[in-house]
Length: 533
Image 1: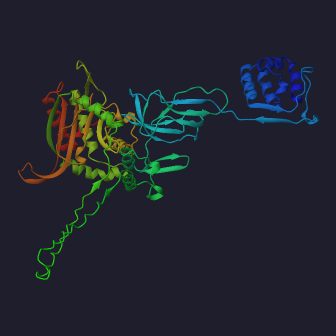
Image 2: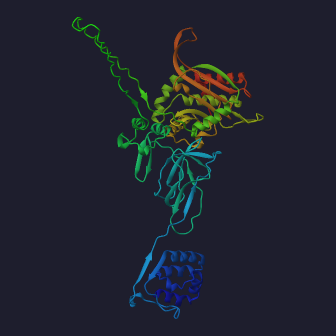
Image 3: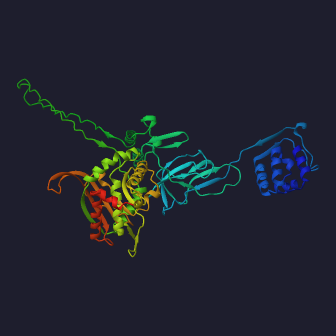
């Protein structure tokens, strides 16, 4: 404890007296090392008394000294005790203190979302995490987002199982932070996932990697199967659809063969009254075996589960749509010239790395039509007292994804070229295939087109997505005979279109005129050049 005497000489004893008042223990009795004393000396020398107090209390808690014999310091309070010169033995024990355990709460994601479904955990109890490490993936009725950590520490508790519903403002996990200065309670970091070009998504938990396509993940989620419990037989341990089905068969049972029926033997003939000598012996008729009928027995059970995520959002949206009186209008469009134009531009677009479909032309033609009929790009309030005309043409495209029906929208179509629309559609289709569409892509739509023809069918009855006032459904393109201007039968590429409009503010004539203008743009794609900006 020579450091202590030097400390007293340098400070004049007043800071030592201050520490004595704080700790209620003479500094020399604490048996602290020189580094601790120098650290306290530096803090008190610069007037950082609060920091010195916290540090002193921390070391007082962390260090304890057990002695078989203790010298008397009451007579000589400044006497230095040197253990090497004493015959008695002294022992020094220390322990590591754990830091505070902080509840990691689910912050407000926005868009009025009050609850989310926990889709996947990226950590487990006992895992060590750092700031901005992924904690879990949650899914709301609008999008999937990744929750990242704000603290460095160890996961002590998970509050929810996979597929459980978590409420905004409630804890997701408890994190034991590292001991040190007080850690401020900050809100969680909600990170919208960026676009991924991988053909599959994966989770990583301390070196454990589970690989599966979105379709396989959806199949597992629908059957309440944890991917961590399934053994993958694909390349690099990837879980295949067959692995999920085999695991499900083991859990629920399969079609079991029935117990075969035994052949029924007829009873032996009864003995007759006359003697057997007087009557000739009759040979019993051969027994006819009854064929075994296969009766499959299925041992599975019905299951009931709550509506979650996008399915729950669909219920809410379609229930609101029932309040809208729909006006329907249908027509057919001759796309022969557009088919030829796309054939010429397809190679050029692919050379730029973009797949060019018919959809960018449909969307751009709709935007040009909305410039002439802005009421179709409007919204009406719930009381149906005011109409808001939208300046931006945010045209949505209904997509059939592994998570269900999603309607992302292309923003500001009125300012984009056909090629720029194709680039944006490629981006959204990539995100939709991997389940990574964010809230920004799924909100703010003003007009919608549904490409139901990519699956099949000609006509449909599309349902308006509130607060929008119009929607169109596009059928499949068919090669059919039609008459040309010279009354000759020619081969034509025909597509049927079905429109629905909010009949409270849109009359039939307006919808028909918009459809005719939209059809003219597509049947004569060169005419769009005159109105392009």
